[in-house]
Length: 163
Image 1 (cartoon, rainbow, N blue to C red):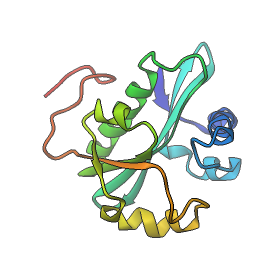
Image 2: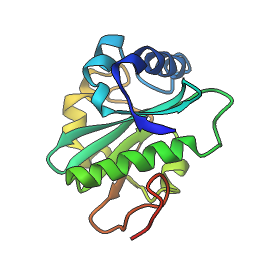
Image 3: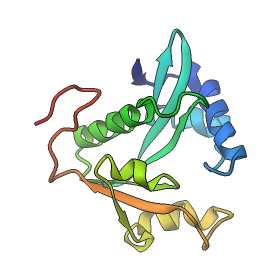
């Protein structure tokens, strides 16, 4: 089941993100920062266990970022990550956000959801709020991807309909 995260999910989210951080795939997030931003997170839960997480963070009045997408080892390829990203995109639509981006090593995954590769210079709000504090800055090896929501219909998936 995909649902919005609640505070009791914070430790499981932290564990998922930490596993990806140790592999050099995600930036670390402290448990405190996850608790502070718990309303940004969606989780995939099965039998009371958090299997995956993803966050939608509003960056600017027309821009949001999909971040901290993590699916438990052994469960990748089942469409869980896709459903989480679709939930984030739908939430962005409901908030009135017109552009959603992500910095990723999985550009083909995001391309399958309608994202296009863009130059990071198109995301100055991200660069100057987060990237300047990253150990990889200015030599980031992630790809920036972006989707424009105002020209697309509702994605099929979690909410079941197109239109």
